[in-house]
Image (cartoon, rainbow, N blue to C red):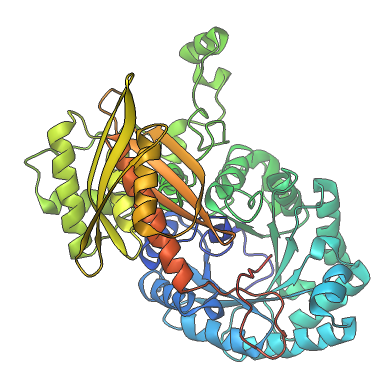
Length: 546
């Protein structure tokens, strides 16, 4: 890849770093649905996961490479520690893709070298050269990240980058791993790399950053001014701790302020050529898909994709917008794909029309899932006069999100009121077909339901989050419920939607329980503390912190 690709490349890591948000673990079907939508969005590279982490991660990356990594599709990338086992697993997982990339990393900050790797600078330089060269023997496109670059000594960071490029790396990613730097500092870091790494002209400079101080997007935009031409980001800014730089904010900042950024890319300020390849009209749809599947709601005042992003309550603002939208709006809502789409389907609609609309919304369901989703749609059409795309997304995202069914909810009934003690009766069906019933009292109907379900499951957990929101307006709106359970310091989320919020809460709780039980059986594996040069198995519970 050329040093300057002529535009800013968008490297989406929603499926890798974004999935590290507590409680946001995705199954294979969910990852595939998001990857397909990311391809429609027009991202250049999809970091599909960390193949060496577990058989499940390997399978998901391999499947995405098969389905999404077509000739005209995005580059499919996998993450690997600077270790032979990781790199080989990564190459095998992404093999079906037409365009493949291995992204390998090792820490370069003194604090990481001393306390995590316990290696000297010279040892790390040797590992970089050897492992990048090994990755280059397997694929043509290799990216290298000096982890915690933001806190690394430049006197070591520069030769580390030089060694990676000399070994064949075509992209050098500069991570602000802990979200520590300010825009001026981050820009100076990129500028220093440009001036002091002699072979930097042979690689694209990329940036990756976390939002611990709320500066990730600002840092990235400053990096673009200093020559960075790839931005590693996530949908809705999800990710570890405070999350990553938000894709939608970066793309729209460069879209709206194109005349400001054009000169930094060597263009005329008045040029109308897009700075990225992203199809902005797909942004809102992608945001909703990721929010639905991860169960992570977008805050109302979130830039670009928040519910209030295009709302005006002030009388002065309303008056100005009515006279000319430009008075208080710098982004046309239609630019990100917001429209009041009504589903032209009803009780008499056929399965083919239903499937076609799902595909437009970014979903591709297998026959059994499609049949079940279609049945739910028909049921909703009997109860709800108007059905919107948001209703359809709520139905189908829950269908796609189903974890392995240790338990299936077959019955829930509650009694409550001003003079009644809230009581719930629930019935679960086990995997072997047995029906289990339990009744319980609680402080309210939802509490009673959750207590009854816990008695049946008999798995210790703490309910750390219960949230409910209306999918659309109106008294007959579907209610979306998200529940997060903590078990052995791991979070497991469940998500469900129904016009009856008690039923939605019960189903969300069962989904969370199913995830918890599946997760307990297969503890996830992630990198950090294993001996990096050996490719040894990873310690349980560790995740890449790029």
